[in-house]
Image (cartoon, rainbow, N blue to C red):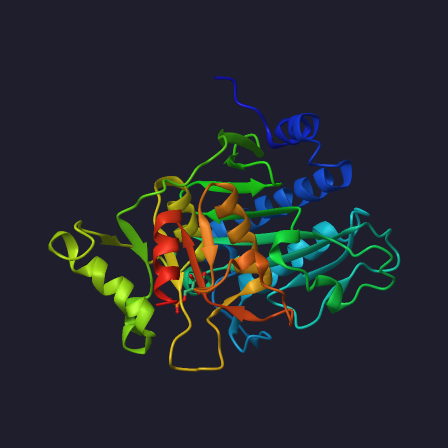
Amino acid sequence: MKRISLTQHLVEEQRLHNSIPAELRLLIEVVARACKTISHAVGKGALGEVLGSAESENVQGEVQKKLDILSNEMLLEANEWGGHLAAMASEEMETIHPIPNRYPKGEYLLLFDPLDGSSNIDVNVSIGTIFSVLKAPEGMGEPTEEAFLQPGAKQVAAGYAVYGPQTVLVLTTGAGVNCFTLDREMGSWVLTHRDMKIPAETKEFAINASNSRHWHPPVKRYIDEMLAGETGPRGKNFNMRWIASMVADVHRILNRGGVFMYPADAREPEKPGKLRLMYEANPMAFIVEQAGGAATNGRQRILDIQPKKLHERVAVFLGSRSEVERVTSYHFE
Ligand code: P6P
């Protein structure tokens, strides 16, 4: 079958679904190009003098890796001159980043986790970039943080790159999910998986089991039933995977099914979970739903959550629809 490039795909999507206006297509192509440069930097590893800590902390209070900062700068520089954005927001920056006045401004807001899975960088385990695109509110003057605080259902595009054995880019603009593989010799993104669908049933779950003594009862019940295997209430055996890079776990689930969980737990009752709503949970929830899966915080659809703060956290249950519905139902019993 003749393979097509990201550009040809986006043009065809615009023709078929009228879902990718020219400015959004430019935005996606610019982000995709930035992911290529991040992939190149990540791929150098120790040879690129980019491993290790940057001796600084981000707004999350996490020690930043050099590559966290480098990836963030690559995305800022790639996106600020194009005229397609009003502002950007990143896990690595406390406040929003308005487009500098020397450049034209557009109607989109771009949010990203420039390098997700940082604890895996120095040990050569897959990491990635997650991004989310919103439209700036009508009549917005100077961009404000409030302009970003839209429910995930308002996203016009979302995607992630995985920097692993292959470098892949997974993308949705609301008309299904497509996956592109980086052809390193040509330097181009090639469509390799069209209209991905998550299997409704699965035998695999992903959770950091070292937190199990802190889990709330619905999660404990759900996991214990799976651990009981074929002689237990589920009547089948399950397998577990935890890569500690959300992009890698979600990509596996997109390909072969599964359920990914980062629940709230008893350690910090006021903390609703570890993952961030705006640039981790929302883009992944959009992609997962577009692939026929489901994504909740244990009680409601993630895409329906009204954000209150840019860096707010949320509990995440996402993946094969039947499993997400089951574990969510346990939260109401
Ligand atoms: P833990 C990476 O830091 C991340 O934000 C996600 O990519 C990943 O799923 C999770 O945190 C891993 O968390 O507590 O298992 O290290």
